[in-house]
Amino acid sequence: MKNLILGFKRGRNKWHGFSEALQNAGQSVDVVIDNFDSIEGKYDRIWCMAESLLPVQLELEKRNGLNNITQKAVETLVNKKKFDDFCIASEFDMLVPYSVIPTCLEDLDYFYKKAFIIKPVIGSGSKQNFDTNIAYLSYLNKQAFLKSVPCDLLFYVNQNGFIDKNFNNLRNYYMAQEFLEHNTFYAPYFYVNENGEVKHIFTVEGHLHVNKIDEHKFEAKPTDFMMVDDNEVPSEVLYYRNYFYETIVEKLQIKNMFFAGPDFYFDSDKDVKIIDCNPRIGTGLQILNEVHNNELLTKIILNKPFEIETKFWWVPAKIKPGRIKEVKDMSKFQEYFAFPTPQLKPGMVFPEFAWGAQQNVAKIILKIPGKNKSDMHETYQTLCEQLQNCIVY
Image (tube, rainbow, N blue to C red):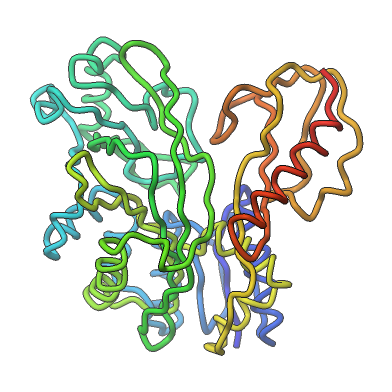
């Protein structure tokens, strides 16, 4: 079987591991990370490592006589606002927080006394655009937003959208979405096989940290993601989790696709809400594959039974805040780094909180394996102490 993987250079951690898994399954693989218009050749399966590349997959599938996704699926899964609207039309309206693409001041009336976040309908919070100083920031209410940003410019941009070079040159818009005041969320990972059967792989428990920027705005960033058993997941999430996926897969006619999320939150009334359903493999699954000797993904692809023997915790190392003067050799910790060896340099600063896409911030993200929470916490504490000894302020 000949496979094509579509990705971006910045997402190497996703497509590199998946490419190895396909090769371990005895299948051939081509990886394309640019010049998508020049792709030639016949392929049996096409995999996207970023939702903004789904339109490319659709065109290639038409050319290759494949039918893993439909036009409706692409339009729905690429765009966060369209996905919200699809969920509402699919009788999941109780799960969807309010959102709107504002083109005038009145469009924000819902947020008169409610906090909300501004984010592009296509994209990822980890690829935050610092030039806008708008996206992925949250505002206390409508008035706070008006005092913080040039809203007329935002309304003007949203009239026709903008071509986003970071996400396959698709037309993008900024949406305002109700902010959910909850510090814990649950994100399931699913696989839809060639028969359209939905397979739950695992679920992570994540936590948020809120950073106050000024009296008008703040940002909420994830602090960690820990794999948990179903008996640690709230019953309300379990109730909606599989039913939600079975419904969207049937309605959108999806096959051969991985999903990360959506994130299941609870609002102030303790009702379940969802945001960000990502039709891609997800870093969490890549980490889980790594802690299983890079064999788990291969079994999933081949529809073979698999057992999850080791959990993981994806978390920033707890390092004392301060400006770096010197960094000693950390190569012996390589197996615990969630990404390649951290590029720490003299002059960089460890802040009180280090996650997300902050610029010129020193951070070390760890993947901690373990059988249970106590194992992972113990390993984490030991690693943080050892890493701290490698840093001179």
